[in-house]
Each structure stands twice: as structure tokens, then as C-alpha cells.
Length: 81
Picture 1 (cartoon, rainbow, N blue to C red):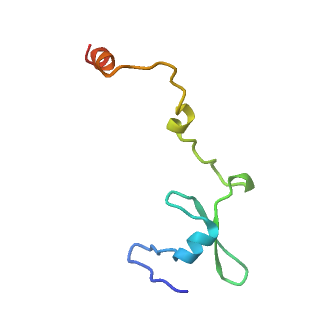
Picture 2: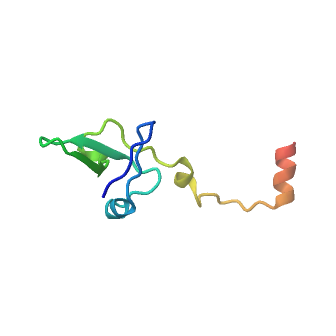
């Protein structure tokens, strides 16, 4: 399976490979060159010594936490002062 390098140094990872590694948009990946000179692509593993852990989604952390039911006109009155 081959692909073409763009002038910006970008390549498209073939769908078969993306599916096999469960790579979706935004997924971090690691590249390495092994002793045989082959490039190895794998899903980034933060537990194995990568520099930074993935950032938690700030919205996901609070999703469903509101305990107040707002009526639209009350909310608009509050926001508009």
C-alpha cells in the first residue's frame, strides 16, 4: 500500500491502516524508525513515556452537571442584564 508525499511533507494514512489502529481525527500518533530503517506508526501511548498526557475535554468534564432548569426568557433576562 503506498501513498504520495505532498510538498508540505504530509501523507494520507490509508483507511485500512486507520481502521486497524482505530485512528480518528485528532488521535495522536507516534512515528519511529526501527533498526532496519522502516518507519513505524502507532497510536500514541501516554503511559509509555510520551512528554505530555492528553488534555481532558473541558466540556466533557461538566456535561450533565447542571442542576438548574432555566426557562429561555429568564436566561435571556439574566444575560442581557
